[in-house]
Amino acid sequence: MKNTIAERVADFLKRYPPFQFLAADSLLQIAAQVQVLYFEKDKAIFKEKDTNHSMFYVVKDGAVRVFRTVDNQPKIADICDEGDIFGLRPLITKEDYELSASANEESIIYGIPIDLFLPIALAHKEVSNFLIASFASNVSDPYSLEESGKLFTEYSVERNSEIFDLQKARYSKNILTCSPDTTIKVAAKKMSHRDVGSIVVTHEEKPVGIITNRDLRDRIATGDFDISDSVDKIMSKPVKCFQKDPTVAQAQLIMLKNEVNHLCITEDGTPDTKLLGLITEHDIVVSFANNPVVLLKEVKLAKRTKRLRDVRLKVSRLLKKYLDQNLPVSQILNILNEINYAIAVRALELSLLKMETPPPCKFAWLALGSQGRKEQLLFTDQDNAIVFDNVPEEEYEATQAYFIKLARITTRAMHKVGYAYCPADMMASNHRWCQSLSEWKKQYHIWITDPSPETQLLSAIFFDYSYVFGDTQLVTKLSDSILDTLDANPMFYRVMAKDAIRSPSPLGFFRQFLVEEGGDHKDFFDIKARALMPLIDAARVLSLNHKLRNINNTAGRFERLAELEQNNKEIYENCSYAFKALLKFRTKQGILHDDSGRFIELATLSKAEKLKLKRCFKSIHDIQELLTLRYNLK
Image (tube, rainbow, N blue to C red; front, top):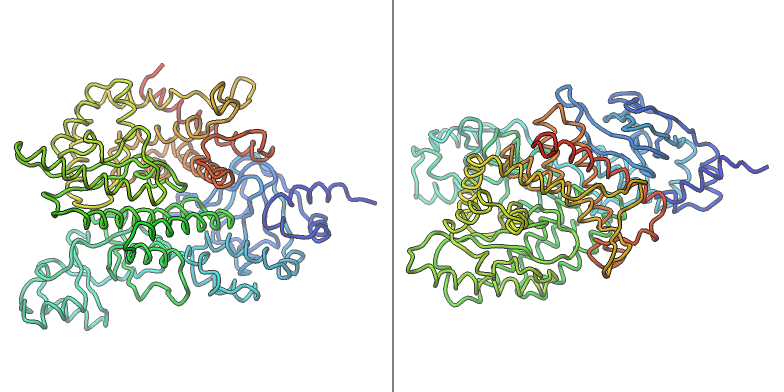
């Protein structure tokens, strides 16, 4: 007699990894022993430090939030949707839970018995690899990954470093520090006493410089300075910083990109906040090959644009592999954007070599739009700008001409790499977007004080910028000017908020998708305009209103807003999750159809995929309602 319930469970599981790798009889054997569990919204599934359950879980319907408690507050690590697996620690390490999980909404969960599943997993390499990848992407202690190598004996850590480079990097919290007026002799004695190769120079607990054994060798042993001099005479500055909990790959990439051997960990990833820890090159596990680092080395060694294009194509393959492994979008963005930025920097360096003379003054190259927000995963068009230092009026035209020529060479190189020219010509090769600092300040002042539909479109793009190459102080001065102008013109926030709610709900009255009514994409769903942009626009106006610096990423903006506004914490966290889910969906569609992923043919989607999309739309409604009330837009 057939077990129809088991068959239904098997039909569901076979649509998702790792169960899709199993033979029908093995899957049916598992499905017959699955526990079907119901949880009301906010009901706990397991808690931190709970004794491990004899099963791991798959979301059948609804959604589950996975979080850890920090300072008595929940910090979301992930939100699992239909088909996602969670609670893998008992399977991988046989340890108790280090995270908590609860129903984010009314949910039905499948519990998979570990004793039954484990022998089947060991017999299928694809299943083992997927589970290791899923666990490695969220594990907090990199050393617990050693257990996974013992459990899944067919799985080789060395051969699969693309997964393990996403583990968290360990860093020292017991940092040796000194003040800027400390003598070199005292600092050296401290280093000798602690038997360490560096000492961080701090002022009011913020890192301002670092001294290493190399500094003592190159600047003291040579006689250039005396040991009675203060450490600020020989320290390396500014220090390179990153926020807490970087992955091994992130730490390696930043060190390699900036040619440093030490990375300071601070509260917000900048030297403007308290020092929390220090990562040294010695701390980074480099005993296995690391594909992102290898790619970054290729970029730095590239002598021709063709070599950069080869790297960019490899990055695309790496992206697909990470998506197939179901790794978190935030991790993928962090790693791939480091490589994409390195490509842009190298393209500029090669372009400067083609110029007949050095730059006539200081300048900075800015990335705009999705690249400025560090949300660019697929090949898209270029959006960039140049800001150069103020020069005498009689030198302005010649100075601008120099940088426009540089921009044309650079944008041509980026085009060859695979980044199309911007159709609207929003590139540094356009004289409108290649200006002095004072001219840029005037431009932003006009956009803020006298907004119009055209300027509103431009300002939406140009408010999402990030530094790529050149002089950082020019970018800081520009940001200061923009925030000062906004302070004097708070009504501009209302204009931006109104623009952020202009796109209606992606669903019609009968909860059907709103699709394009004409043109080349008739009956297609525009995921960029109808789903991603409302979240991007909302995050922008709210982060500007809070004067957030150094956070351009949409998901990161919402996460920071959740910390600042506890009463709206749930809305912001859901928006962060929804944005990452939508971006991942668009990226997968783009890879599948070899395009930008913007327009989606709904007929090609499964019912489960459509449900996942619709769940994200509630966050759009909630944030637009918040903007409407806050800025009195009714």
